[in-house]
Image (cartoon, rainbow, N blue to C red; front, side, top):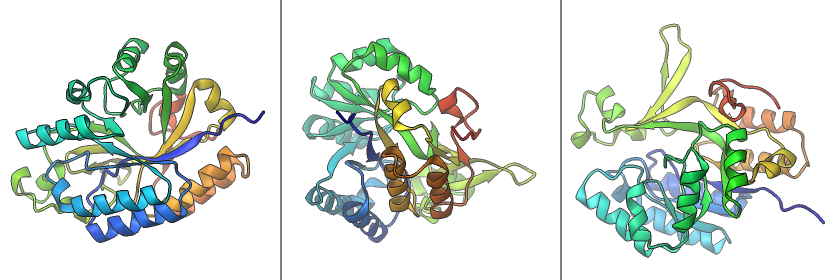
Length: 300
């Protein structure tokens, strides 16, 4: 009997893209990308949500017609009454929801939800608590090693685990907008300048070495996480899905390469080469998965 394949998901978009770009991107995802689930919704900055609301709704319809399951993701940090109300409404009324803020738990009322990587879940006790409150799938914080995730999975039978498999790693969230500050603006009058950096703005050291990236109020890794663990090593660790984080180039190619690798159609070296040539010219990293510094890279 063939083992259940590791599925692929497309995580929520972190960046501020114009509506036309959003529509084109998700049309390709719907028609060409081998992902089963797609997470939609503004999660980084509540100010940006109204700008693309109509485009996101249209993208959701296109994705569902293509057979994808659409999951609506909540804000990481609702900062005012409007954002808290919108989060509560989404959590209460949405059929498929990803929670990225513990404040939404009460509104869910025990119904099924996905726990996003921004929730502070670092041990089995917290994971079991969420499972008892309706959590059916968990995307662990990106700092956790595969070994630590495996230990939690073993103690939480029945909880699906979706590992962050590709993209700039989300590292921190702030009340201060770095993009606005860079342009000598404040957050209330930011002019949405984050749109100028569709994959985040790179921060380098004095000697020109890439260090981090910022995206509005969000801090990201400089490098792109890429999971090179085989399906045979992911399944025993409790992993049932890999999450790909959207970037402006090469996502269909990355997803196809990862699908081929997980299915055994290509080897790790071929997958890595495809990712390197298809997406952003940034270093690849996977140190956190091995329990090392996140910026390290090792071929498994």
